[in-house]
Length: 86
Image 1 (cartoon, rainbow, N blue to C red):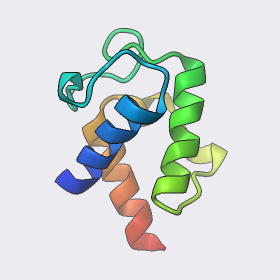
Image 2 (image 1 turned 90 degrees about the vertical axis):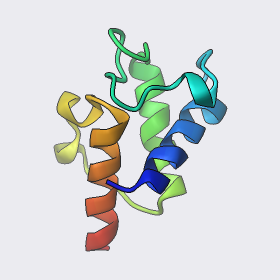
Image 3 (image 1 turned 45 degrees about the vertical axis):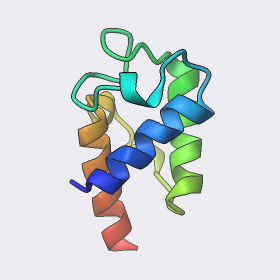
């Protein structure tokens, strides 16, 4: 996992999503959903769009699952793998 990708994801969440979290309040080890950072389905969709734009990649629907959003670290690993394949 790249710490650079983790930092970019934290920046996206704090600056581009309608959440009341600062960069430093985001724990990359907790779930992105309600029981962790509290992102709802609309925020997750906006996050996916922001990731695709920021990292210049496409995430096919068949690769989207709840497991992908277990934490920022898991998401960063996925993005790193997708970027390496491009």
